[in-house]
Image (cartoon, rainbow, N blue to C red; front, top):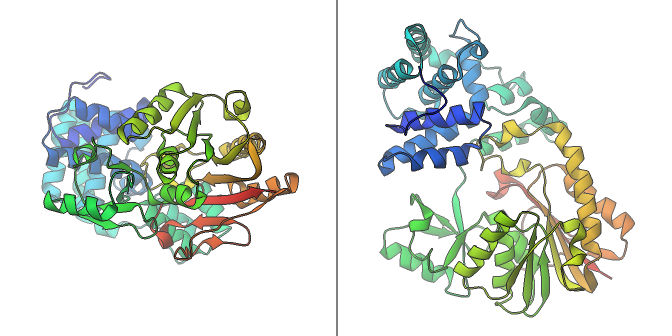
Length: 454
């Protein structure tokens, strides 16, 4: 029987299984565990891609998979060893959602892994459960959406019940269903072109010559959506600083913040640095951008990215943003506050994120966000700009925070002034904020408010 300490995997399914075990037993983040495991394996690119799809898909669709397995397994999954429980989940995901190989091949591969990670009794169990699931997988009785939307969204679409119930209190069931479906699709790979070096059109042309395909982003003028390329660091121009990976929602924060060359700017919760480096590029590498973060190791990544992009106007400071006045020059022309939040707008991006979030976290984060807002307000010069952003869909972290802030800091007024060609559906010019809704906008979910100090 397998132990906690494993040698490198021999194929994609074993790599995925080791990842699932690390996520459940060691509380590892799925993407980090998978990356570590793949570094120990000499797998070809196709196997690495399959391992990624199997591991992330199984974690993402865990509730749907567990619901299906419960109909064919006489044992409760919790009574099985973590290895066998996650092996069943892995094979069930492949049978229910992947369809790349024949059901017989999927079942055979799972039985072979059961021999390595279980004992003869569990080998027989895995074989029997998966055979029944394979034969009857089209008859699984998920709760119907029309009569039981909560049951359907929490099982078939694999989202936490507390979050589904919360969303259904605010949005029509069809909109919540669209959101859940979007969360279950892998996000596109988007990059922000470093316009200090070249144009998006130039980069696309260079990639075309080298066999990589890209299309302009829908909203952000610096953005490109890249086709399947494997390791993005191997794309032409990465080492030269021609681009950096960033979701389009994150690009729009910098774009709509509209920093000007020569400004004194701070990004108060900066790591991993996508927004800070974007601000520096938009300023033409003139003025100063202060990238502030509480964690020195994460801040080092910001500095390394700035060097790769050839930015000389970005400086880092390790500090608690609630006491940042001690380490920054003042007053500032622009303060960007991209606060820690529940991240409910980015569930498509991290397979295990939906299972890590708990309702009590929201109240704690709202308190922290208000402390950060109060500290940021004191740094802005009269006539300067404060930009508040989240990757959350929750009103307590978004518009309710801005209303709370403006009641206490009435000298800050809405100042979201996008160029005329930018007409995002979630734009509210009167309130000075923008909501990004993943099913509609094709981005991560996000919120942005731009305020000017009077």
